[in-house]
Length: 465
Ligand SMILES: *Cc1c(COP(=O)(O)O)cnc(C)c1O
Image (cartoon, rainbow, N blue to C red):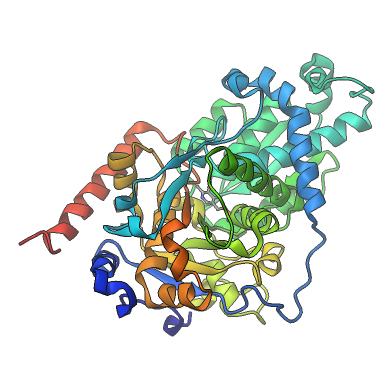
């Protein structure tokens, strides 16, 4: 990777006369809170050779309508969805700015989009994963005449429908969360469900899936390998549907629905998005499907007034590597000297999605790279300061605003885009992508590690004296 491209320096003097950036710069460069920012040079432009793959906003609207058609069935299958009438959605809550950095409050209001609380699947994978399983179920149901004109989709909970679904298999390759989303929904509808798991997958995720009746296959290799094996196994089987995380349009459109719903949530919160109220969104990135869908939807809704940043682990930054090598389709992190070692199991992915990459080339503002230590400290902070229980992959999002506000590259971005005068009225959304289903002992272990790292870095910080 081109290390030069990532600014590590503290911010220039433009705003430090107010004494804020010094603090931000310090925190950012502290041993446990390092975050690096890379600004996408193609953002907002017309990249040469970019094909807008065959996705339009109408596909996203269709996905939203499909999720609505299935809501009565989901309400029936999952009692926890009764209060939301079968819609799986997360709240937007205020985030104390101190979690990002001391003084960050002067750069606008901070929010959390709390996907770590998404019902049933416990992660951002709920929207995309559920949508793809439901789209497949809808196709099977129509083919077999299970849905007659005027029928509500509740009829798909009947034993006749379930017997029909039981002849089909839904399969997926996963580091964990996608498997949980696909596996739990498929099994609940009556499909055979099969999850091919890579080496990073946590034991508790496998246990939980098996308790839902999902077949779990384990492989010693990385995510790319688990996907390849799953894809090959399903390809010979007429009754199998393989959810292809690297290529699926259905998954992508399901993820993008989040943007349409967020637009309404922001209206309800009286949050404006316009020239004087820029919106910054920071989302953890694996193959790019979930954050890509959200960014695609948000750019449709808010255009140039929304600035999307993806956050990746230092040793698994596949989307950054791809963006920095526009001519090298299929380039992996290994080609760039990385090893895929990170505590962020949901982000431990060696290769960016080639479906999503072209869609992001001119839409994405930039990439942030976060160290494992930062994720642990932020996991601890999010719990102890904001009361949010998230997994390391989700805690990575906090590095997003920290990097934008405290690096030279970030300050240059704000300046170049004429954003500086409007930062005090800006809104920042930190997308916490997973965590609800994490067993409490697993969470407490990570929490303790984060706390320890934080106290160590404070001991060498300005408060030590
Ligand atoms: C999967 C996942 C992501 C990223 O999604 P991709 O589609 O792989 O980019 C982020 N956070 C969590 C918790 C995830 O499980």
